Length: 191
Image (cartoon, rainbow, N blue to C red; front, side):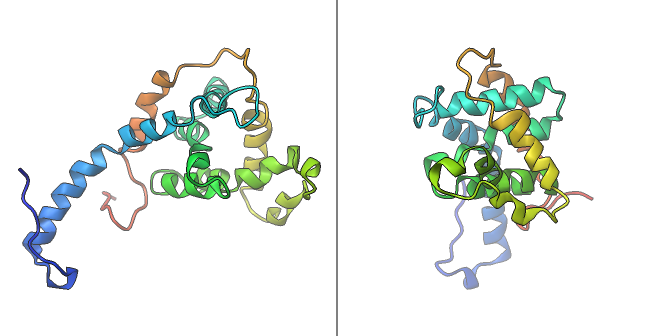
């Protein structure tokens, strides 16, 4: 059995306590890719009314990005862009972006965070919403990148006849991206 810290209030913790917690954290962090993939699988079966289920949509989005020559980080973002649908239906993009933020570039984070609003360009008018809501972000250096993500990979990935890659083919990419935090206040990274 692993050691446990002895304090009952954080302000009473010792260096030894926090070393123990650090070991637990490191072990727990190693399992993050498994938890991400498990959570992604929850999307299977729920179509939300679309022609494919949510997992197929995510896999298809990533497949299109991969086949277009996008780098591994971008492909993983494409795969996970809608992972928040299950527990953050009103702000799924924010949840996915927050999950990815420590591991991806600012540009890829921005794309995932804003893709929900940008995706609205293709259908919000049918819901009585302004399809051009994305234009509030026109000044961002990443506006065109997000618009391109939605146009090339997201809005067109509801095709039940498309030859998707398998989720298993993306697993090594997910493991690689989540093994290398780029910016986290909780994890020291080598410079």
